[in-house]
Length: 239
Image (cartoon, rainbow, N blue to C red; front, top):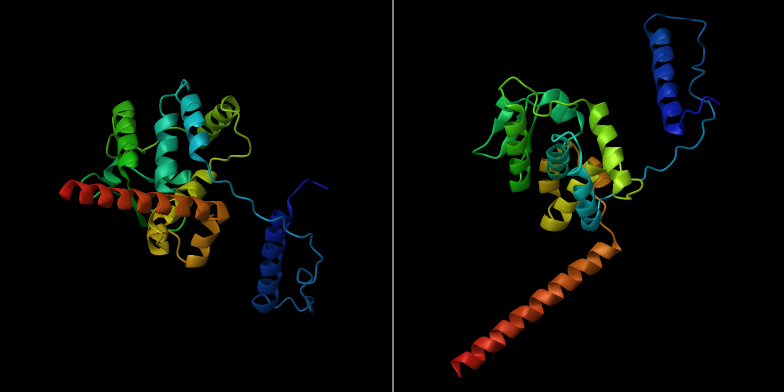
């Protein structure tokens, strides 16, 4: 009735269940002969739907982001898209002192899942250089010196301008993981990018489907045809 989602209700039930278990086993509340939070009939959780940004959407969104009055928005979005970082990590945790420019690694001393190293692509390095130039890049300063609310507001406005529906900031993390999986075909490299502890969590963030397989086949066939043509031309040249 309050509009809470089934997932939120499940989380609240889990908190209540844990509290009542603690009260019974540690505080010895003898009146709790049965944990009333265990057998509750709960609404089914809605399936999680993630979006992966297409290259065509990326181009349209880039044009819209370039029109933002805040110059920090566009490089911040690029950084998130390239690194698969959680939105909070460059805003709340990462500092300029943590960037190892030579090794292309962002050494997060703390994050949602404790310390981890974030690999930086060429595009991510370029985004960081732009942010550094805009903010001054003092060692103790956060890499992204805007609030989450400001970033989200600018993101929503840019998506509206680009006529892109249903794409959230957090979907950039899914986009980065999926693109890495398609590019390298190595789940361990994707795991190194996202910072997940288990492969099951990596699987939740990579969305490779039949259409991706068709595209891979087409690229393979085109490369094979180009190789055969080059070999044929070389043979003709020798003759």
